[in-house]
Image (tube, rainbow, N blue to C red; front, side, top):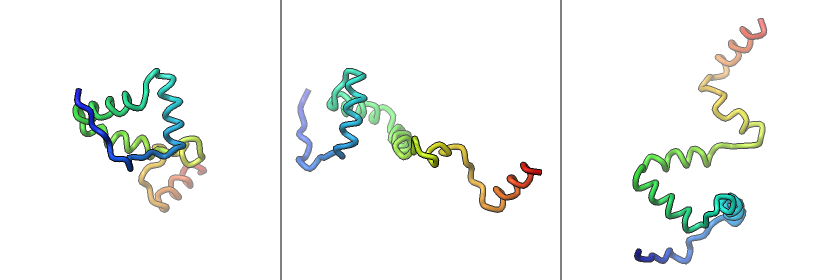
Length: 88
């Protein structure tokens, strides 16, 4: 397998890299294996990028994050009418 050197300004967020590192240790993997697997997955299924970006944007652990996927596309009037129907 040929090797490719990534540019020297290829940097990661330290906090993010440390949290990923702990997950990788549990799976007995390293960063190189992770990136290779990620690249293989993208070449086989390019749509996976959209899924990954969606997952990355999900908020977890906060009040608003709990509501992710639970609130629809209602406007204020619709929400008000549903609320009033519910309490009647």
